[in-house]
Image 1 (cartoon, rainbow, N blue to C red):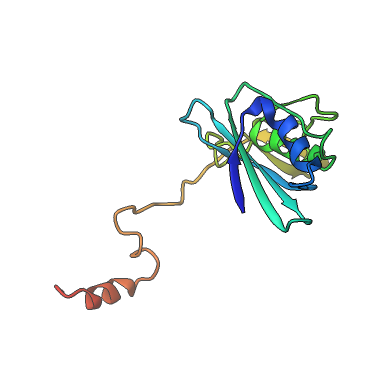
Image 2: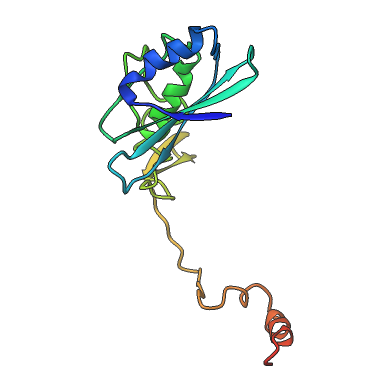
Length: 175
């Protein structure tokens, strides 16, 4: 497996050469994914995973982009990139120039935000529930009420089983 880094502006040309040149023959795009580094200037690392059946080789191309810079779509090189780029748009918010149909693919069209970003809250921004009085699905802001939960962060094992105190005391050499 080979890993290479490339400039974002050269991604379409590089993938075309890697697909068409007889010494490369990377004719299958397996996946496109991303990693979010929110504290860096180039926030997203976009990873293209490719396969050459002819040479039995794998290639991983990586590029770094910031939050406001869209990449060029590679749907003209690999048609399967259509859904993969839509997934990156939906989950990370990475835009693509010249994409034929850039819209959400995994989340609802009214969904706010991009859930795989590191700054996305774990509880999300909204919740979906069926309202029997209205007989339809309703969207509401997240309402987390936990008045009956108490957290003991100093000794997390003690709250599991009342007998755990005896187990812990018996295992310690100073007891």
